[in-house]
Image (cartoon, rainbow, N blue to C red):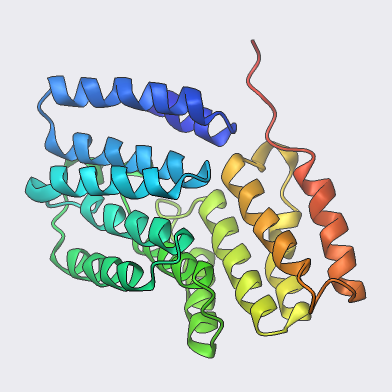
Amino acid sequence: MLLSKASHDLGDPRSAMTQARTAYICADQADHHPMRAWVRGLQSLISYWAGRPEDAVHYATLGTREAARVTGSTSTWLSCLDARAHALLGDRDAVNDAISRAGDRRESAVQDDLDSIGGILTFPNPRHLYYVAEAEVLLGRHSAQVERNAEEAVRAYETASQDEWAFGDEAGARTNLALSRIGSGELGGAAEAIRPVLDLPPAQRNHGIIVSVRRVQDALSGPENRTARLSKDLRTEIEVFSSAPTPSLPR
């Protein structure tokens, strides 16, 4: 499980998925429903960041079936994973349905043994807000409410307890806010939102963060933004940032 997450962070989805399948076999042999559901979520996550949204939906669906007997936050995570994957596919109705299901499951969740362990095995509220904002932004919903939702996700990480904070997820929340502001024509606000991300040292530039900042780079390359001086400067800085990803593990 941890090997799979590490491989994913290093941008090796093939190894990550192989290790996740091994983790699923172990969870299945142990007849542990929450862990089976959680590993399906991990497979959905790997597929999402690898640019395979159909696979991400597939694994989120499998995990949701496993989660029928799960009370903890994993079921909320699976719905949020489903929302983000469908956002990449442009399926607005499916995104809305998944976000609604995630809210319902958050309200009815009862902590289980995975939540008690914490870390990547639980799905705290800041992360929930981040996933929902990302799904909305990826759908191209550039409205004042979407920007407020993205801002709320950033604030949630700024004030999160140590147990609920993760630098990668905060970086993702900040890039979503930048995307929302670019969509509204606020290049200065976008630059402010992404600045803490671009200041991350190379050791923290994992695969998900690289993909997220490149989304900002792509948005800045649109016809309405590409000639602005600030847009050019940010694109250049993102190019340099992306060229120094998280170092590979020693062999």
